[in-house]
Amino acid sequence: MSNETIFGLWKDWRLHAVVFLIVIISEAIGTFSFSLGPGVIMILPIIYAIVFGIMMYFTPFINKKQSKKADTLILLSVTVFLGKIGLTVGPALPDIIAAGPALLLQEIGNLGTILFALPVAVWLGLKRESIGMTHSVAREPNVGLIMDKYGMGSPEGRGVMSIYIFGTVFGAVFMGLIAGLIASMTPLHPLSFAMASGIGSGTMMAAASGSLIELYPALENDIAAFAGASNLLSLSTGLYVSIFIGLPLTEKLYKLMTNKRNKTPEIPVQKKSVK
Image (cartoon, rainbow, N blue to C red):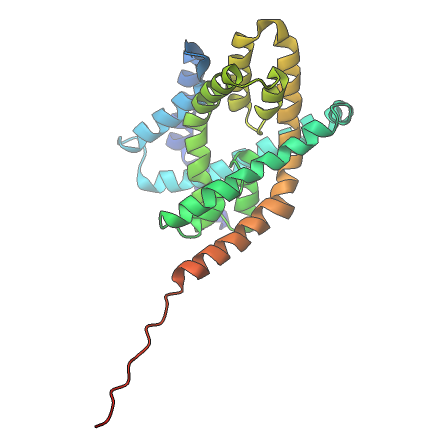
């Protein structure tokens, strides 16, 4: 990006004013939660912000050029968030070590997105977008990984951002419902579901653990502690799992699936007999 483009980005006062106004309105509305069956649905300020941002695109306040500038702001905001994660993980290392191997092994479960979602994405006809979409649960560290390796404007970058937005809007709703539903139907210990709720997203963890606390109020402190430790581990180790296992595995499986799909059986040509 040229210095002129960067200067133009910071000089665009209308874009910054609209973003600031959206943040103020979203935070003023606050968080709403309500029960739905065994689950708890949480509507968070970030959901309002996404909806308002999409609405602004169809108004005269934001044009197509400004929306492209916002891509750069996403990169900057993710970078700041990754720095915040690093400051959080360091002081909590003793608690992570004390949590035991169960919390460490639960991170492997995030690889299920590759085994289950990638074949579906390829079957639906998605190209390299499917790599960004399915290599992980597509939270902030994974968005940063894809941006660093492929770039925001790449097919992989578009894929990871689409799942990031989709997970932000619907992920908390899904996690809040599925945690309470499965916990109430299976004999597994509630703390196992608390560990499973920490997938690296604060909103999804809050929704899932809130649903579990509604079902097991006597275990409120334990559920909150295990969910928080699990989420912290997913934030700290999940990026390394994606770098060394998730992303290479997704690339390999994508090549195998697309090569097999593109290969068409050759129809033997019947030679005409010469009479």
